Image 1 (tube, helix red, strand yellow):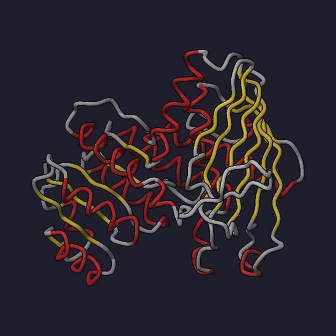
Image 2 (image 1 turned 120 degrees about the vertical axis):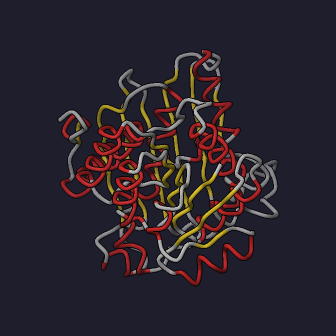
Length: 336
């Protein structure tokens, strides 16, 4: 299989390494708006660097992996669809809802495949949690608590391009919540704080955010994110049922210290970031995409599902700005 990879930044370079080692990838073409960076990545892994992104769509690739800057995602998804190519794309599809809907309509019109990069669906801990919830082992689920905490803020220049904390970070929690429980989020109430570094206020964003969500079966969910978690990268989810409670992301690298005399010791090597924490999941999602592109596997994370997580993030942003609860049905979808 001949794969085209667009974008050779941090996550793109990681994906390039994974694809170059994959048993089903016989040829890998990489491209970037920074041609020099693309050549450096290609030389390092034994791939072919295209002179520009255009060549990815004319050099006879069988599928496209999009890991470019977010602003280019929607256009590249559309180009892949018009070229009849299966596409994998890092989230988000676009920075706003209209751009997202437009790209998804192109995919629908072309009848092609779009797999979104929600890597938590491929993490072992989240997978086990899904099995426990769906099998009834926890009993009736009544409470879910989720957290996504970055150890250091991103560069200031990234913030205006990120879509904001709900769309950039908590969208992962919204997607995995739906995937684990099989339920829909019906309303949200969200708030945020920009009391940290001034760059967040200047970008109209927040450095810390929280949301209370209600699922369609009455389960209550709290979700929180921060860019300023100095202890380390912390992504967890607690699922509480009438029979048992389980936690995802709780291990000897979780950056949390107990104050109890008999509590566990602090982590010797806390997770430094998302690539380290989810390396195995990133590899698994690309393996799944190659099977999807070959027609051997159903799409495990299609664009319509990604849209639902984005609609929740959009509702949270409206709630934060307008200081009111928001029903998800207020946020447009593909059908209205």
